[in-house]
Image (cartoon, rainbow, N blue to C red; front, side):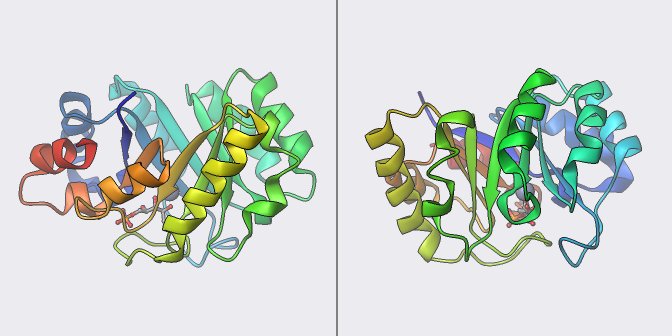
Length: 215
Ligand code: DX5
Ligand code: ZN
């Protein structure tokens, strides 16, 4: 399986959102990555349900929502109703992560757990068999356009080893500072899904950027 690419719509032009949704529909991308920020878990507010709904209406590829919010349990069903297929919550935001993961799956979505750069992969050892994907944050969440934190590469390698040893089936997603330059190294380290915002929408030629990140 070649690596999957999920462009982050946070870097899209909101003044012409339809056009950027179409770019992802037509390009080499595989999923839409939707960053939901509440201004509490992260020091930024992105967009909410009306904008997700507008994108969902035009999107012809799976929607992957990354919840950077406290108490995500309150909103899981809203995302299911909007047609989100992949939903990740932060380890750091969930006291009862196992319950939250089961609730996401009961709603018919694939469940992911996201880890901040400082959060050790050893902390998810006991939830690994239950999740469909692990999102390794390679920047501190909250903003697009930040530089890749180098430790994430080794973290992906170690997580890949842990997944193989346990015989788990989950995918590894990497988010933050992903570019055409580090995509291959991440793929070799074991990443299955790359999220890229500014490297796609900030590129001179976003179609070419998507092709290059896919490899
Ligand atoms: C950061 C978000 C990312 C971000 C990625 O909090 O989770 O998805 O939009 O943007 P780039 O690819 O520009 O680092
Ligand atoms: Zn994200």
